[in-house]
Image (tube, rainbow, N blue to C red; front, side, top):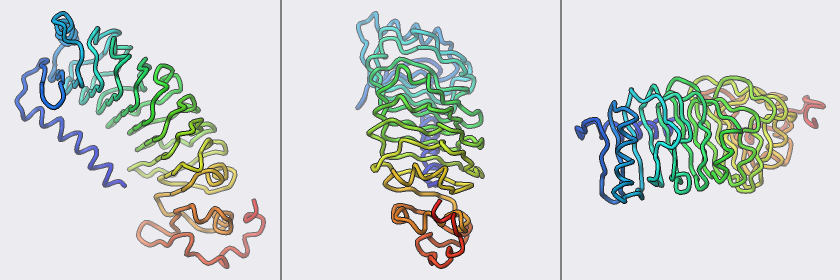
Length: 311
């Protein structure tokens, strides 16, 4: 899984370097190909981007497949109404390390945007935008954590796929997303997950992944997880404790529950090993170099667990 994440990040970086290799001088251009793109690369002022888009609209060209903004260390702020009357279906903003403020910059793209990707910028929180048709949102950070708040999605309630890297999630952040199907949170904050951290209310929920490339202990309190369905595959990178007070709502609902890192299979997992939940779990017992699946551990290993088994 970590290899897949590494390859994903590398692919994005490779895409950025391709633009650099192409020798593009700083500025905005229109690229006609399989799709029609507006590409703004290099350290250009926000007014240059705004003037370029305004000129396109004045010339009667307002519909494009993509907007790509790359490698702009001068960009600090995407102001309200930046895109004006120009409509895009996808927007990709990459390697703008000083971009810290994003207002409602979409303009007419509020009614056309379906995918927004923001990689390796300087955001401190997921921007609050109005994008009625937005289906996918990807926010990847390298060093600075991005905070995911419930208010961010007030104007983006049709989202189906969310993908974050280096993120801290506030309680009930995703609760209003009734069409959410896939959620990835990689390099999750090491802080303890509080009640409501990952509570959902989407009948479409099919996959939830919470992992970290760093040493994340997976600490959580009762009520941290809720709203999983019998169609949901829940993959957790690590779990400090597997008590029923925390994970019963998950195991009683989700179709598959997986923990990436091996866990200590003592009496804390007896309630899973001796229950009907077992076939729907992928839990490894041991350490990173030597482990067996919980299904392979003999029931006799838990005969002295007492009341824990029926908790």
